[in-house]
Image (cartoon, rainbow, N blue to C red; front, side, top):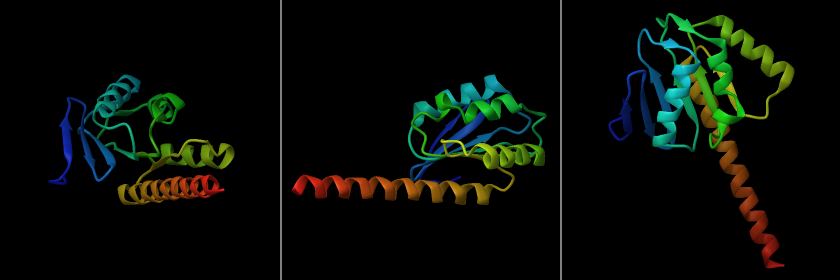
Length: 147
């Protein structure tokens, strides 16, 4: 854990906010169902509701519900979130996400990964793209205001 981070410990997960990114580390043995992710997301929003979010589900989780993963990518859950990545212990969940991504290209930046470093890299890329887009928009508005 980062010594310069805001850390909040809860019964289902530890939530860390550092340098604008939020990392949700679910506890070992946690059952990741819809109720779990909704409670954890509520706790996360109390700490920070901006920037990218990385969820890390441990390999020993006895249950990772597809509905829970689906909800985390919903418009309700993504409100205020630039991008969200979830690291799961299941190759099947990653494969399902790749198929969904290839077929539907969702409007929200939400992906499922097996590797935490790859997930974090994707989040940073999306985050910087969003920041660059915002900066370009500010410059455009500023230029239009001059005329």
